[in-house]
Image 1: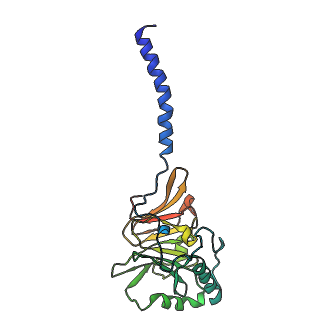
Image 2: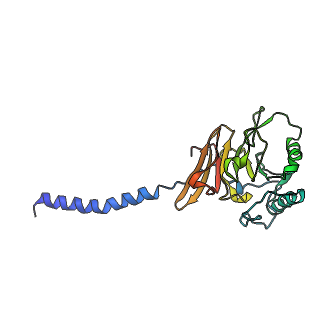
Image 3: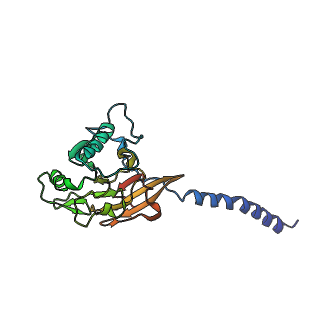
Amino acid sequence: MPLKRLVFAGLFILASILVPLVSSASTASAATDLPVSLGLRGERVSPEGIAAGKTLEPAVLSESHPVPKTRKELQDQVDEVVSGRGGKQTALNEITWTYQDGMEVRLLFPAPAHLTAEVQESRNNGTLDTFYSYGCPYSSSGTRWACIYENYNFNGLSSNAVGPGNGRMLQFRDIHVVQDLGQWNFRDMTSSARDTTGYSFCGFDSVSGGYITTFRVRNGGLGGLGALNDRTDKIGIGYNC
């Protein structure tokens, strides 16, 4: 066989081996590693943290979270989370986790309509510089939050409502930390999101090979997540996601 044909045949065989390898690598890179620079929030310790021997994984509430009809039903929901996941009740319908680095996470529960005024008063705590964008707080002093909601359209809230509306809400202000929503029994329960921090606020869903981004907002919000509704299991603020 002439030399040119031998060279051509050799190149053809080499190409037939390399092409599948290149294709496989491209497919695997569709999912990306999480941008964890400071670790998951679950790795940090709260002063009111999880009691010894408790685990973060089992849900302490059922997947259905009906709006409580009485003060007792509301308090029972709050007590159930505090006893299972730590935190401190800081308002009639609010639990706060305060971490060693000074950051906070807040979980808000929907309240009976007849307790609306009392809930707002208990959450104000005498601060007059706090404002709300669909229940997501920000202040003139510079403290700003990013929020996720259990239901569509920001739990049905109007633009300046205090919230949380017709479902639970989680509020975050910790920058450059990926936080696992399982700690607050909120995995795969996010239906809308809002940001007042000015940073990119992103949701992530773990998939084979890494993660996908379920939402991205900055100084605004998404009233619905479409096909990615109830797919978020981690969130992060301040990432180029």
